[in-house]
Length: 336
Image 1 (cartoon, one colour):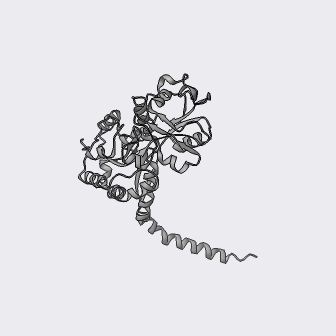
Image 2 (cartoon, helix red, strand yellow; image 1 turned 120 degrees about the horizontal axis):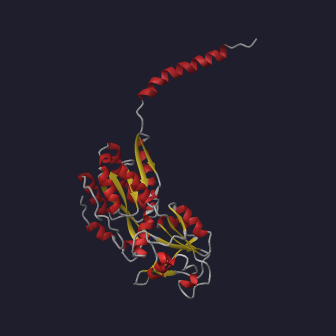
Image 3 (cartoon, one colour; image 1 turned 60 degrees about the vertical axis):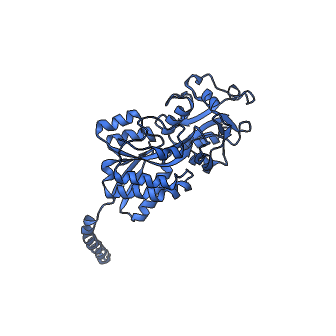
């Protein structure tokens, strides 16, 4: 006959432990939650800041960071579904109106600069630079089905298919690039491989000898063994993307500020306020680590002042930030 007493003692001990622990579980405070969504360009920065902030708070705050693109993120933000919006371009006139209709007020906080990079495969041996005019020839809507070979862009280039990769239509990168290159946001040919996920674009460009695409600098830099950046000639000679050329204003027109937008009501919660202040004080080091260009220290101090004073609205009023340089960003004053 099997002696069941040891098993019964184990079950009894387990039940006692559960009874002892259950009130503690009920009394435990759930972690405060901060919901962030938006740009895949800004994602690496916000993810790095979120990780360090959560470590510093030892599980008391949970931060979720989604990637639905700047446009997709603003749809959620203007509905009040998220606390913070990552954006690789300023809020648009349509999004300002959408937020107004739902009563969502916001603070616009610049957090870094990006050098939007024209990338080709390392297998590409013929192109080292490209002009803004040539980029327009490639990407304007009328190029669809018509500009399909490299030789049509510049005659010494090969009679080979032009395989294009770029941001999807919900991406702020798409809006900025089209505004800067074709002269109108969202005005682009449609026959290219599009994605809101920049890692997908990196892989597509790297694996296709005849590819050309545009990606944020932070996605180019870790992949430069398999990608090559083309120097961009905006009228004053070819310039490669780099921290130096962004800071001195020579990489134009593809140098751009990136932002976070904070819901005003969310900013009243202590965990959100602490997160944003952590972002503005500790973020510069992390921004550099993920290969974006930090803003000058005085910009972060001014931005912190604006945040603490509760300055609402946007300095762009629905217009794009094409050609904006860091020193000009400093001179802008937010208005509701």
